[in-house]
Length: 139
Image (cartoon, rainbow, N blue to C red; front, side):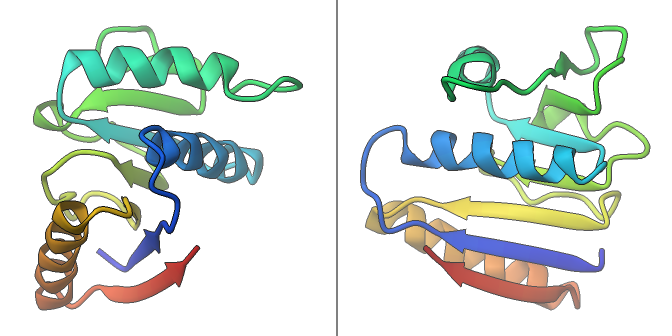
C-alpha cells in the first residue's frame, strides 16, 4: 500500500459522505483511474448505485457492480467481503473495514459525527502501522 487519503467532512447532513464520495469517484474516474468503491452491505450498495446515476443534474458516473456484472465501466461497486477487483487504481472505502494492500491509493471519507471520527482515527493508526503514506484533507 502506498497512499491513503483521509477526507474529513465538516458537513453533518445524513448523505454528506455519500455525496462527497460521488464527487470524488467522478473526479478520479475522469482522470482515467479505475475506481472501486467498498461498501458494507447490499442496502448501502443499492443506495450508492442509485446516487451515482442521480447525484448531479448535469452528469452521472457509469459503473458496474463487482463481482456480479460483466465489468465494462472504469468504476465498480462491491462489498468489502468480496475484495478488490484486479487493476483498481483507487479504492474509495465506505465500509467499516480496512482496505487490503491490493490497492495503491485509498480514499477514506470520515463523516462529521464523533463515532465516525473515532473509527476514522482507528483506521488512520492501522494504515500508519502498515507504513502507508498518509494525507489528511479537512473539508
